[in-house]
Image 1 (spheres, rainbow, N blue to C red):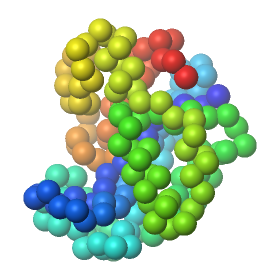
Image 2 (cartoon, rainbow, N blue to C red):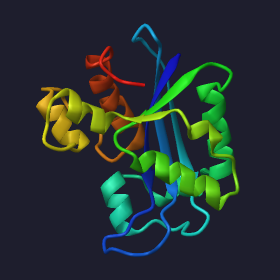
Image 3 (tube, rainbow, N blue to C red):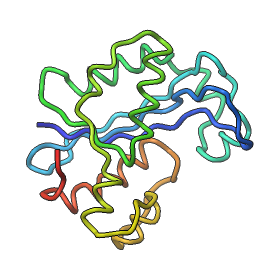
Length: 178
């Protein structure tokens, strides 16, 4: 079994809007059954509906328009991600909350792609709250503080958040319920 700790960044705007959000970065870390980091994956994704990033989105994520302009569209980036996961081996998708899975489902729907590969998923955010008997689930930055772990890299960057989530995943490796 491989554990795929992943985090997405998506198009966003400063003011609340009904615009459809799309993935702009997929960051992931692969961890073995022996609790060893095996590999990492990072890809920028060019959105189809709103290919121009808002200034707010660029500031929040540090992802620049030039990064996106050169990126693959979602179907190609997802194909690379799924090959990296290796669907021939057992895997469990793990993210900090349910947003990331829902965003992948939305983008798969948009591009008429299969979503079956998303079935094995858990929210580490919600299990972390249960394990620690917290009143409610907390954000990644606060969870890292709670665990006395450093937030390395840039918060709201997919690959950096995936690495930071992995630190919490490994700390509680034997406690997650799959």
